[in-house]
Amino acid sequence: MSFHMSDDFLKNMVRLINISPRAIQMNDTFNELSDLYETNPLAAEAKAKQILEDYISALPEERQQRARAYNWRIQQELRKFKDPVARMNKMVELFWVGVKDFQSALDGTHPSLILDQTGEPSVVKFPEKP
Image (cartoon, rainbow, N blue to C red; front, side):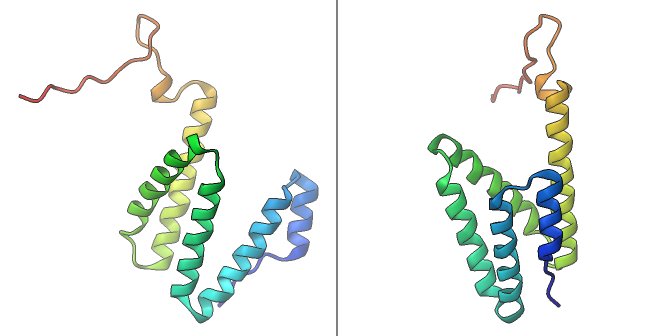
């Protein structure tokens, strides 16, 4: 079974929230990968990895390492799940955790932004190795 986002849906999203032309291009890529997965899952996986690598490589150099590290962390979480539905559920969970972290960073309530009594960011002290 293949899943496609309709062109009408995308046109409405563009009109409502000003989706960039890149988002429409990504929809075409999604539909292409979806079709490829139906016939050749391994080729679809390889193509998805190449698309992601191309995207990361196009980032400014100072952001590439962090993007690769973030991708690695996500992949480590997802590799625990062999069932596609369980894997998708984990992806959704990771997405919403990211949204929550982003919102708390904007609100100034993210744990990494909380200041100690001196007005300085608090630093977690780890015990020194013996």
